[in-house]
Image (cartoon, one colour):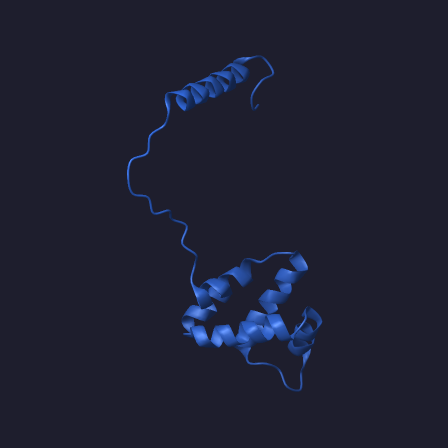
Length: 116
């Protein structure tokens, strides 16, 4: 729901950064809950949706919506490794890996062994 609102309403990165800064560093969850319940001066619906999602995350000890907001504001981190050159495995390392896999296979084949 939150991701759809951000996309449909073209919420800018600057908007999100400013809101995140204000919400995360200037208010606690009780402040945010009080803002959401304010009938005389309610926040705009977009802010309400985002703040409500964050409050729900806090109650569930979850960070899913915060991650979505942070991804929108700062982009998803790259999880790549740049590698150039050749990679070789020493014969000793290959023997150790072979021994480990043989032991694992043997323990899985024994009665009561392995994941059942």
